[in-house]
Length: 198
Image 1 (cartoon, one colour):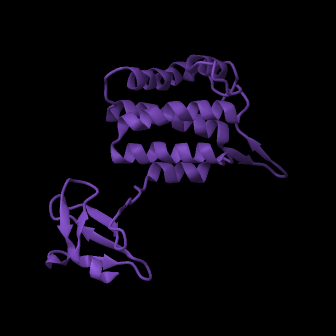
Image 2 (cartoon, rainbow, N blue to C red):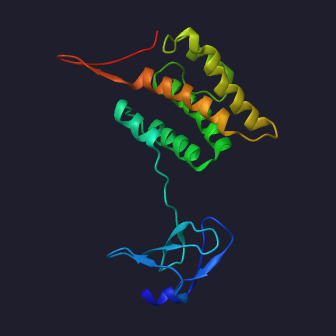
């Protein structure tokens, strides 16, 4: 498949393509795969491409915040793990509107995971949040901040607006607190118990 190096490959970051066999820049082939790494001459970002299909392979962003959170919490539900990871990846990429929308969805998944509410098509988003506030899982001092996620999420969903880094940072702080409050595990002598924020 190495003859595909003579093809044009699309950049994942900008609207340019590159003829890889142009002698400009280094190419890195991964051992025993058909994946090649190359730098775009236009935007200088690194791409991963498949030599067989010429498809872009997405290079997932590493988030130190997510990595730290993973070490401190124990979450069994795969949907919550995936949504949490998606939030931090979106935030790291600067996709603030997407991150805020994911946070809003993640809160509902946490509510259902902990049995605070059952999923119902008839139930609206605000009702889930009210159930969460009344559950004892989040202290009263966090009610106003919890509303931030709901309000920002509603704005992104229903209005013509874009999330900002500042708003996303606020949402991240609330989300981080909620995840740590509910899913942090305390190791005791003979058993493991979940810490709750009262």
